[in-house]
Amino acid sequence: MKLYRVLTGQDDAAFCHRVTDALNKGWSLHGSPSLTFNAQTGQVIAGQAIVKEVEGKHYHPDMKLSEQ
Image (cartoon, rainbow, N blue to C red; front, side, top):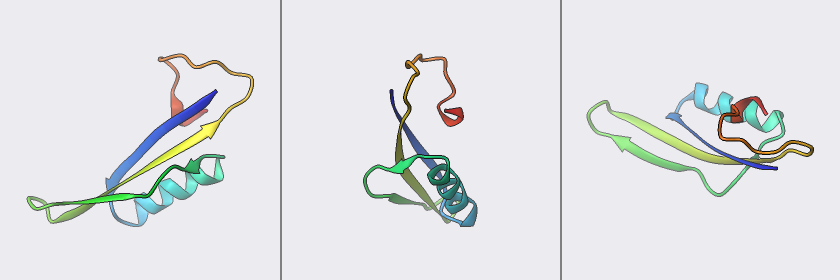
């Protein structure tokens, strides 16, 4: 089963730690990160797609992808 997620959040150390945690749990980067600027809050928002191949399981819409 191949899984896909998009991590998003303020472009800060916490976001980088979330991506790093996912990479260390077997996820891989998928494409380039994206950034946008929220003029109302003055924050840069980052997004990064990640994918993971999981053997022996079948996808179901109710599963928590972050726990795979």
